[in-house]
Image (cartoon, rainbow, N blue to C red; front, side, top):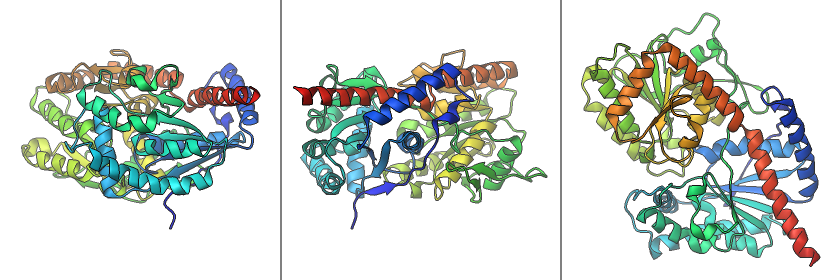
Length: 486
């Protein structure tokens, strides 16, 4: 029985970017694409990660692979298989790299045995697929243990790390020491921030490539207001009825029409918010580091304050039954619900806990798109964050963001211009004050939203991401050619 699962990816022409980037930039990108195609002829570029649903890697790979395929590069995406024990260990490592103890379980020889046993099974199948000279991009801690078998098979291995902490603590050191034996032989690394690079991965082997969004995907494509309204009413996220000319539609990645048909599961007291009600929205996994409970308690302070704008809060995440590599999701969701039940009825009535359907990934993305576009303010009050694609997504949609001034979020938001950064994500009084400030100033909301979209357009689109990867692959193949000529 197969261990690895190949995710089907389509083909997306680079020319799609023409309406959203300068002509000069587009011309240079097409020239670079031609050179990359010639350089990578007869090679496969493999991406390997741990899930096809949920999380930033699964968000980015479909479009990045599709654009690469459109210029003639054979690009493929594989998902490894693991049991709950494996994913418990890798989630523990994930938390450690963020400087957090997670569930507190030891990263000892028992954990290492679980980790290596799972990856041995995956590696056996993987090395039968990968040919000498192919390029393999391994994403995040779940895949690090595949590096040596792939190097032995003659592949060019790049380990791509999307997480980290600016000032490593004891927990972060523990996580890196666990991964070190698998990473020391790797010749190339990609990180989202220079501060995340551990010493043994540096010395010229690491480059920084910030994540990006695909502005044409179901999650980020333009949606008319009637589609936003219809989708949110149908899913139960705002009160009905839908507009007279109801529109459930969006465009799928292959250009075919899609339709939102499923409903969200929402924990609430009373009815959904009215269409006219200003919404404060955080969308993320049910992960302790995303601090959904803290967002809720900070919003409760807003409800108790004298803020004259009566907003409501939507905390939205994937249905925990649909994300296989996150064993904490169900526990975190239940903890948030339990805390919600302790709040006074008047506050609970203004807070909605939404589990979004994940059976159809692109339908899920369209729901997120509609919810972000309808939000008055998007929040990302994470306690730790490698980058935070939800921030870029909201900025692209012209939404002001209130977010923690940590990790890669600092690289996205210019405080006071394209959003507001919390100095301390634990400071609920400051969080409440920022929400009230923006809710009470429509002009500032609009000004920040405009600046946010411009910044996302200039810095965080998929085309720039591809060009940076092209430069890395050029360096890899030139090094190979240099070695061969000696």
